[in-house]
Length: 468
Image (cartoon, rainbow, N blue to C red; front, side, top):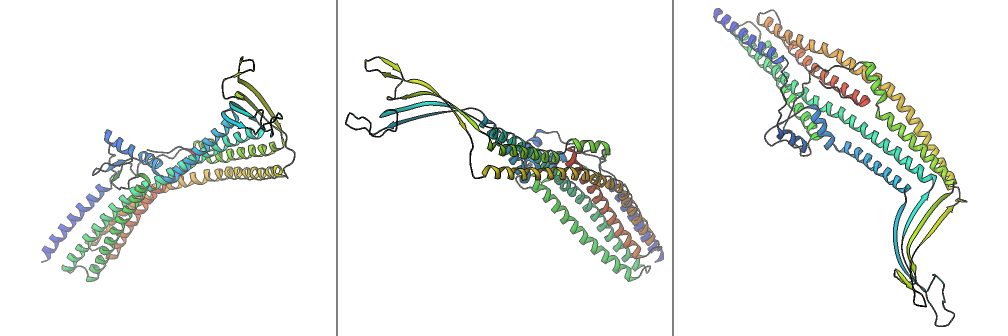
C-alpha cells in the first residue's frame, strides 16, 4: 500500500510538472500575427461592417479611424466646426457686392379733368420697372464681423482637434482594456485549472493518510472561488468588448479580434521633445487664442456703431411708362427705355438710446473673459505637461516591476505546490500562492493598460500617437 501511494505521488508530480511547463509556455509572448492583406477586409473596414461569420482583425489605428467616423460626440464637434466655417464664408460674402433683379408695375389714380393726376405716387400714371441692382455696403462693423467669424471658425477647428485627441484616449482605453480582459481571462482559466488540480491532489493525499480532511475542505473552497473568478473574468471580457464595439461599428457587432499586443514595447518620448511638441501644437491654446481674437474683433465692431456707413447702388434697366425696350415720342420717333442710375447713401448714427454703448460694454466683458480663459489654458497646459508625462513615466517604471512580480508569483505557485506535495508546505501556503499569482497577473495587465492610456493622454497635448 505504501509503494502504491508513492507511485501515485510520482504520477501527480509528473502531471503537475507538465501543467506548469504548459503554463510557462503559455506565458511566453506570442509572435505578432501579420495583418491579412486582402481587399475584402479593406472594404469592410471602410464601410464599418465586419464580414458575417469572419471576425475582423482590428489594429489600433483602424479602430481609431472607425471611431472617428461613427462616434456621435466627436462628429457633433466636427459638425460645429463645419458650421463655423460656413459662417465665416457667409460673413466674407456679405462684404462683396451683391446683384439683384427686380421688376414691378405701379399704377396711379387719375381724373378725367385736365388737372391730370389726382394722387401723386409715381413718376407717371403708369410706371414699369425692370432693372438690375448692384449693391455694396461699406462699414467697419461688417469688416470686423467677418474677422470675428474667421477667428471663431479657427477656434471651432481647434476644438474639433481637441475632441479628436480626446477620442483617441477613449479608444485606446477601451481597446487595451479589452486586450487586458482577454489576458485576465487566460490567467483566470489557468488559476481555475490549478485550483481543480490542487483539490484533486488533496483528495489523493487524504486517501493515503498524509493530510487532514481540513486540507481537502480548504482546497475545495479555493476551487469554488476560482470558478467564480473565472465567470467574472468572462463577464468583464464581454463588457469590455461591447464597450469598444459601441464606439466602432454603426451596425452593432462584437465579431472582431484585436491585432495589437498589449505588452508590445512602446517607447516613451524624451521629455524635452514632448514639451516642445506640446507647446507648439496644442489645440486648447489655439482655441483659447482664437476666442480672444474673436472677442477683440467683436469689440471693434461694437465701437463701429458710432461711425458712419456708406452704401452704393447701381441700377440698370427699364423705368418707363411702357414695359418695353423702346418708347415712342409724340412725333412717332423711337427711343430706348434702357438706362442707368446711381445712388450713394451716407448713414450717420445720431441717437439710439444708448444701445451702441451697451453693445460696447458687452463686448468688453466678453473680451476680458476670453483673456482670462486664455491665461488659464496656458497655466493648465504647463501643469498637464508635467502631470501627464510624470504619469506615463511612473507607469512605465512600474510596469517592469509588475511583470517581474507576475513571473515570480507563477514560479512561487509552482514551487509551493511541489513543497506541499512533499509535505513541506501547508495548504494555506498553497492557497496564498494561488491568490498572489492571480492578483499579480491582474496587476500586470492593469499596469500595461495604464501605460498605454498614459501615452494616449500625451497625444492630447502633442497630437502624436505613440505606437509600436
